[in-house]
Amino acid sequence: MQYENGIWIFGYGSLIWNPGFEFEAKQRATLTGFNRAFCLWSVHYRGNEKQPGLVLGLDPAQGVQCEGVAYFVDAKAAEQVHMYLQKRELVSYAYHERLETLTLNDGQKVQAICYIVDPDHSQYAGGLSLKEQAQVIKSAKGSAGENLEYLCNTAAHLKTLGIEDPEIDRLLQMSTSD
Image 1 (cartoon, rainbow, N blue to C red):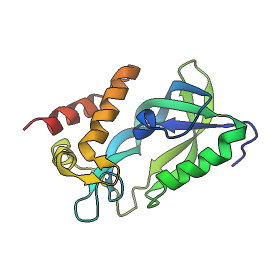
Image 2 (image 1 turned 30 degrees about the horizontal axis):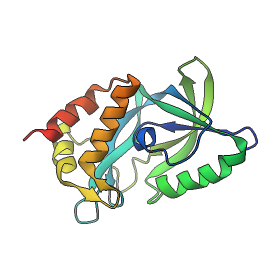
Image 3 (image 1 turned 90 degrees about the horizontal axis):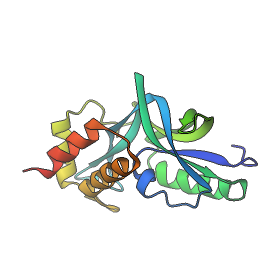
Image 4 (image 1 turned 45 degrees about the vertical axis):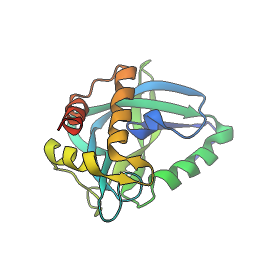
């Protein structure tokens, strides 16, 4: 990875509301060819080995887009931020770190670090119904807190950014009702 021009990072879940690093610029962005989905079993942050939770991943799919946030980190901090993200996001290597093309809100196209779920990893949970996801999210808890808190924070910050995600909204409704 080259750092001399800085780096862009794509946030679609917890990176939206808890990036954990300093950045120079932040802008809404769109990634084509991926869904934001609760498709990864969490045994570290939002669940544990006995009762896994679910966290978001970028799940490859034809004809879809994922709206999120692009962060620009200047060259001075780029390597340190990248190392932080690798430690945070690659804890169990259930994601592939890749450079993907984002379209920023201003129309500019940039290459950004994205964490794409690995559908061949044992923690991949693609294909669960919303009802199954809601049941898991209601009760799971890990080292970073309750799984429901993760969903609530993501939904609230998407709404604040003006990003519509009907599946997240429906999952929140299902996870908070009895």
